[in-house]
Amino acid sequence: MTQPYVKQTIENEVAYIEFFHPAHNSLPGDLLAELADTITAAGKNDAIKVLVLKSGGERTFCAGASFKELININDESTGKVFFSGFANVINAMRKCPKFIIGRIQGKTVGGGVGLASATDYCMASKFAAIKLSELNIGIGPFVVGPAIERKMGLSAMSQIAIDANTFYPADWAKDKGLFTQVYESTDELDAEVKATAEHLCTYNPEAMVEMKKVFWSGTDDWDDLLAERAAISGRLVLSEFTKEKLKGFK
Image (cartoon, rainbow, N blue to C red; front, side, top):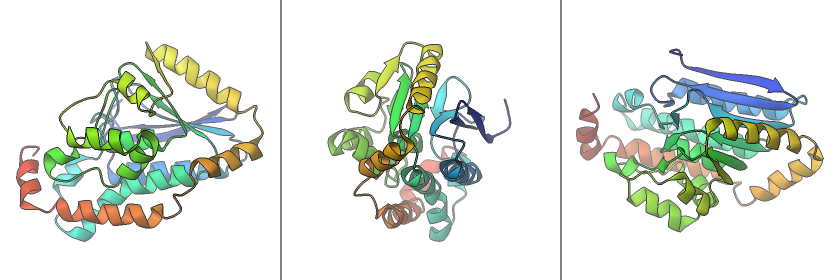
């Protein structure tokens, strides 16, 4: 696989939404927009009862934002638009009236941790270590922070945000509430994701809609909140500190 994509397949009333990018499944703006639109459309599709969010490849679930695009930001408005990409996906997941299962097969960084946190039920392999690396380049996990804090608590979120060099193992993430289960292999993970998703399809759809509202209560301000957070990152990415750090990635 060499070409980036977002694709959806429907099997037994389950929509498997998969994204891929050859750069460790990092997500540029166009893929983020397509991912948000795909999730929104699936939420409105009566043929779908449950969603599964997954990525292609075996080694990395998501390496976060696209550094190629990050390096090319030259003004605050462009920066805000760039960082709004993950905000739009998280808000699409939040507003989707159907349960979203996360299938995390490998390492996930930055915005990828935010996507995992925005799923309603997140399952992982033992290879799914997580890291928030944003402070290393002079910004912070501002946009994804609310989703991570909601799922793992402020203490865990602040720990991995401050310790920006460290990958925390999947079992740690499970202990903090991000992952529901951690499996020994990707094959075992896939079998359990499929079984869980198809079992959820036997539940009353109306009950799941109402439970989803309960799960996400108190987040009605996130359209504005995440936009404000995107503006903070868009400003910080133009700082001399961050520009010097990003030179090393060119």
